[in-house]
Image 1: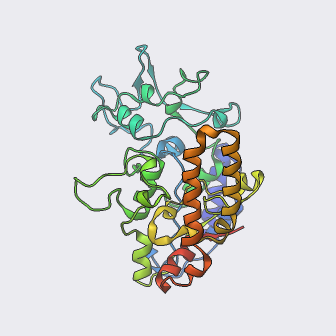
Image 2: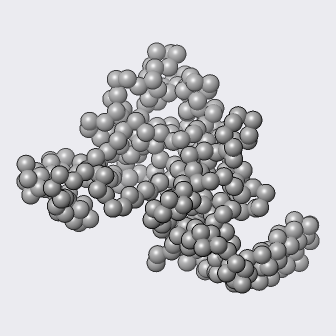
Image 3: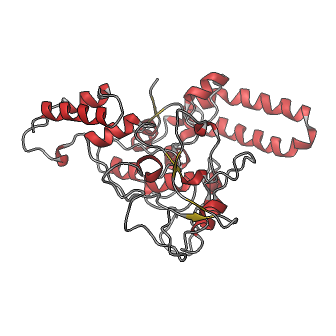
Length: 341
């Protein structure tokens, strides 16, 4: 069928599935672009990568027709003979995937479930995959007995995502790079590893706190943007503001903060602390910490150490020193922290 016919049938399909009979404008716009004859994905000018936060494939698309979702006949079978989708609680009762229902529940406001190295490994249980209810129980006492870890959304909850999947191509059977938390998986996205050197005796940074702004904890191995830069392949990371404090108000912080979701900030060669906003805000941070010392003298040693670190940053990352960086180092910094408002 031609493109116009496809669009018309897609709209009818969506209407029949109980969603809006009108395609989302952004999807319609993309579909209306006629590709060059005999072109393939090798002709693409840009590749856009978006990593979402702590979401599994099944959480969003387990109910999508045609994918290896909840009806997967090849799903892992546990020692009790049941599919991995049927998890047994300490009370002896089983739980299975259940829709969270965005419209009629407060599921999106029930806080996140545990998602770190320790609970991931407990859920895995040495390859048995049978401790998800125990390891992923909510920390909120009002919800701890609800099997939220098996909760999912469907087409009615996520109409745009399902329209996107219907209109283009979706890959199932994808998982997090490692059964760890947020930062390790983002490190995998940008560098393909958690280790500074690739052999077993080198520390694997499996918990969020392993990598940070602190000089001793910065990532010092090569990542993909560096390789692209060295190969003269254009690249850029778009985000809101960097995660270092820049003196934004509470509401600005809520809307514009990056929440440390760009771990490139922690790779030493990108020199995130040369951010003008951060450097200009250092005196304000120091003044605030001094006030905190006056309020609580017991915190003096810890807070004074923080002040000393900030004073070092004032010198090391002074704008005059930025001019001393090589052209490659400047490119890495400027392309990694592109802000769009």
